[in-house]
Length: 387
Image (cartoon, rainbow, N blue to C red):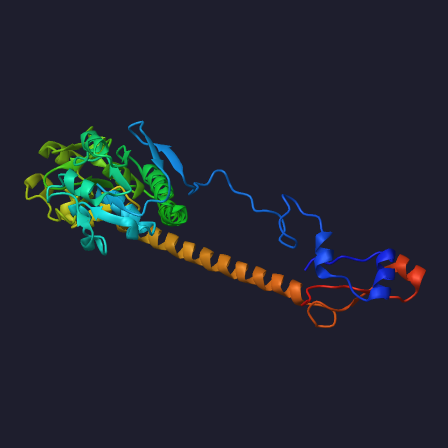
């Protein structure tokens, strides 16, 4: 509670009328910022660096096309599982009316209209019939700029994303989708969760030696310039395919596998078996039974859940360091919670603790000069009162 000492003139007034209106007193307190209603304090300020959800909204997508949204879209179609996953993660799944086949792993996605074939070919007519307010179209093997133009010519509003190449891209895309659909808070919370989990991994990897890792699926591997490469590195491994000069997705040669001799093999749930080949059998990974299978929905889709793939690899490659980092994070979180609770308790105590134990009332000395002038005359200190 803010305490004001009342001067000589004020004392005379108090002696005559016996009280001062709390609202009148509040009106004399200086504030910073623009004044609001009486007693409301300064007007809130907005951090310009944070994404905002204000409509009408005009943005430019990755085809350099200007997109205009008059209000938050009530119906959204996603043309890629990563966009659908992001909508679910930020709490905007109720706005989704159509998804592609490979997004059906999401809870409740089976209730949405499928807008693709089993091979993920986009069904333009189905999308047009849904008449969505917005279509989210991340670039992929199944979504092309031709699809986007076809839909736009039919009068559909489409926002196109370039391929995500890093976890930073996933963060940015999450914020973008949040802004487009009016869920900035949900997007911010999702990115905060990502950052907290990745910070634990980063702490775990500090000073750790990275094992050699090979990702294999259906006889292929992922080299440089792939999202999988970024995840392996973030998870604390060294991608031997990239070390061998492989770019993008290629079939590794037996010679490369033998020469690189990976200590770990990363598999996915769509291709969970180690290739049956002598080159793989000779690796340290196979000889020591060091393989890890990652959910393909977390590994191959550049959405917020890639964090699960990163943490799974970190926990596998560096189990002791990761466990210690998790414990440290939990301890820090508990300490922060205790500190916040104590601060709240102290604040409440400061607000209600008066000399006579009655919140809002009491007797305070007026000071030596005042006592010299008026003897033992006391001044009333007033606080919150019910009118």
